[in-house]
Length: 222
Length: 251
Image (cartoon, rainbow over all chains, first blue to last red; front, side):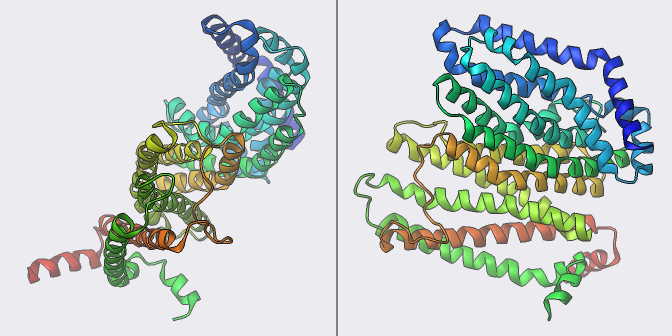
């Protein structure tokens, strides 16, 4: 299967399987609502925590969505076929991660203005938040794919997935939250944004290859 | 023996088992001597700190434990690379052996840090950069441990944990710098390879002894665990049977 064919297949699978995209987004807004309702601090204080909260919720949403990244194709055998026939198996994985990112990271970036308002972040922080999400979420999808590939062989891999990938997500949380914080304080956020871009680049060079190896291990586990 | 030949011979667990006993004993004795000397020197003879008084002596346990814990994780990452490139069985045995002791040392570093932080910073726990990076290290260890528990097949278990250890090792510098940059209460590293320590020699010499002693202890522990693991994995083979029956006959 050539790569454009694969891309269009993945894209159609994403569009037709609306639950895989909409359910994590519903979770995202639910979590934001729960934070806003449960938070004991007043409105002008939420600006201080809003950035960290936004990133934390994005991390968890991404983790939930990652669980289904390879699962269906793994169970019905398509993944084995594609991986064993493709000339560059890691490109197959990369395309799949790219499409998953379109359905989570990019979508969250586009929804960021709304999320910022709900979390009580000032409007000056919206642009930086979007930029931070755009630069940081690829790392979540790429690194998370490694965990998803390792745990796809287990019927209940969800908790194990979290245990494996959440520690790796920590730098994204730190720099993402500090970028938004800088914007809230009217300071220059270039440094944390550059860090986020760097982490995504690192994840791009490591993630797909490691995820391919992980999938090969998981296929043997069956 | 050339390095290349040594590398090739490492492919045989049996050969490793046969030559490793003197190393286990050597590292064990060195650890015993160095840790004993270091303890007495550090606790009784090193001068008290002019600000922290005697409580700074916790450093003599805290710093070696934290250093060895990180080194063991990085060692696991390197072994994972070796496992993937050369398919060396011994690399997986090494990973298996590093896990429990690395976890223990990380927990010890966190605990002793809390005990030290109480009189010095006034708190048992602070979300400080290096504390968090050590905690993340503990979670990385736990993740590998949990993954290994979930997989039954020995070879696949080894490859899976090797992969996770490698990815974790690549991320360790990023995690470290991210949390240190985030905000930090910790003093800078006591020992670096490039700079002279800021402490007087009466204080850092015992620390050096303790650090080397701790590394010897780690080497001793890992090597003996490796030997046990080899015996367990190769329990069906001729040479292990001969070994066991030989020991029975002798005893």
